[in-house]
Image (cartoon, rainbow, N blue to C red; front, side, top):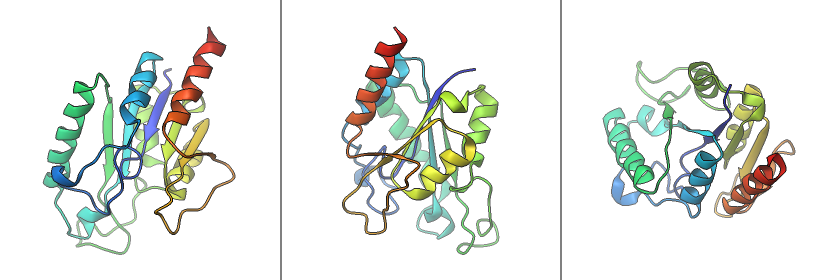
Length: 187
């Protein structure tokens, strides 16, 4: 069994600018590459798990999302980071056409994306970490049985609230520091 780092995309991997789907609008979050290099170095698999309701709402297509994802993963590789897989949920329970308007076990706070990764890659969820910027991310992590769930505070989010089951952080550097300390303890 392997440990993994699960990352939300908008707000964690990149700055959240509402329905980011074009390369020109994509801005990596400060510290994301340091975090991923550290996690890879310590043997963590990395997964990006993201709700993409913009697809259901018709703001952009799955093809647009896939093209942006390929570009993003190339930047991760250039920075010396390996992301094992990106899981996304294009569905929404209230918006979209018959293809996308549905309840899905993959839409956070449901743990479907995490559980799928855990099964396919033999992940020990209790030894794994999740970094999200919304309560739904944290709920998905807790629902899946992830051991440590970090909530990245974003002062621009009006509806963000602290979940007492999460470890509140103000920057990704705090997770890097956590991993460094964990490594010292294991050594």
